[in-house]
Amino acid sequence: MDKVSVIITSYKRPDTLRRAILSVLGKGYPSIELIVVNDNGLDSPYNVPTRQVVEKLSYYYNNVIYVEHHENKNG
Image 1 (cartoon, rainbow, N blue to C red):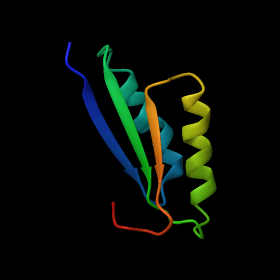
Image 2: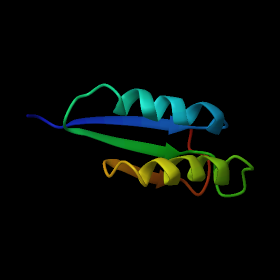
Image 3: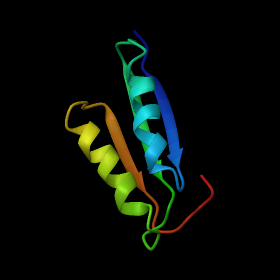
């Protein structure tokens, strides 16, 4: 079966990120690679909460890849 890659960019919305990640992973497709891009920048108050959401879910799902931008790059 072919691998499907899904990219979710997050900017100032850690509160809805968990729901978006679970929505993708809940589709039941057996070979999904989920890439979550934290586009908040290191100085943003949203940076740590976004990282925490991904870290908690990565504990249960090994197909989640986390990418963190050092500054906002607009996606």
